[in-house]
Figure 1 (cartoon, rainbow, N blue to C red):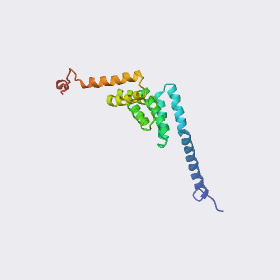
Figure 2: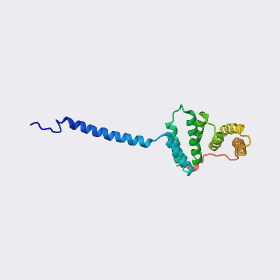
Figure 3: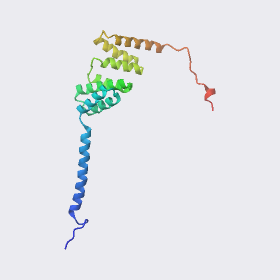
Length: 178
């Protein structure tokens, strides 16, 4: 005589909540599958660098860098160098300098780290910083002609910047008046 309805059925609520739990677990499983690992991001970044997709490679390296523990200094330094190289090839100088400084901070001084950092600092207009990086690079590799040329260009640009121009720039109030 007792009829179970939705309001009195104790199993109705539990089945509804179990459905929500099942859907939630599915989302978590899909999220974990899409995350991947540091090695997977590194492989994807290396593959993107190989075919010339530098922005994609930099994104993958950035993802791997953020997933790596700061305690793993050697791996983090290597990833930072790769990220800096990708940003430099892509033309994003500011991020390349930041990534290369991170690589230097983690003591990952690959053969080209300091040279690449000097070139990027020179592009930014920081000639003193570029001079320091290139000098440190030339202490290790004194026979590199390209680094000597870049260092000489830093000195030249610094002296040109100090010299005043023959022209003066004044605001043209007559043209800018309302």
